[in-house]
Length: 397
Image: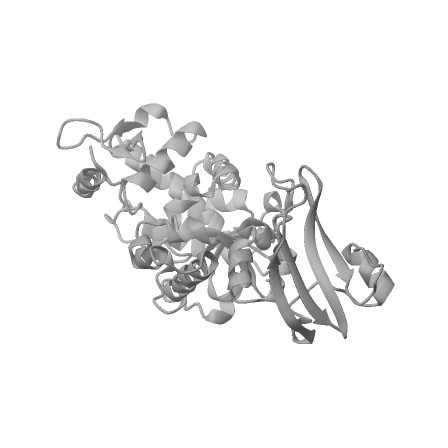
């Protein structure tokens, strides 16, 4: 079955979307009546939730850290802390998100396997979502069970929302541009740019500029992100790590977005990531529909973009020994280039071109010898003149 046919089939399965039940109003009222110092365990008891609430939270957190798009937290997409979701409206935006929730809930053993069933299409075959058979609740008992799980996640968010914590000034999300400009929604807008005969780097810059306009001017970020809940960090360097020199950072004011949880709310999010070994200082955030990003919220971190605009910040992102640059700083003529110290270790070398026998030093050595930092940064850009990017013949060729 082709994608369009699948989409039409999914759209026809509204009866298979699980909806909010009639117990939410009573539950939300109980949340508002909780003592200010109530722990999660006490809140579970006072709001009438089952003892399975804590395992659901742990499962949602674990799956978020493993793969954010698979986490059960996405069931909170249509609710807000303190508000009652309308009875009978779908919990999930479509069968894909519903199926992801059910799979994780079953894997985590907070939802019995026999409480779900496969969604059948008009052709009497299982409806497929991203290569997986779509799933829904088997009966009304299962619908109640799934609503209880979502209420447990809501309670966790509600308690976090009313905690008094000292938020950072900004949160950051590292974005690799290719992850967005190849999105089905955005791709048609830039196909003509890609097909132009211009310089490769200038073409990439034009595409990224259109992507930034799509986010800031058109306000359509939600159309090209996978889900309404996104991962942010309080660390700009961690965001840069995820942008990986091929995109940009998106910054938000934490007081103007909805924080489900963070390193300040849950000790689990203070632990190093199992894959990267880094303390990611993570925040799970929902961007309100009326949030307006501006150009000031975009921090470029893209090597090709910097080279295309002749920006000295490109030096810090050199990724191969075919790249070098010359520039002047503090009255000194400098050459910066990258070289491979080993098969997997790239280093930057800075050479004072005004000194005959300067064969190059690392950043710290250069600073020690000449009294200033040779690395172009946002703080010293106004001190740099005559910057020129130079394609260098790689060593050994």
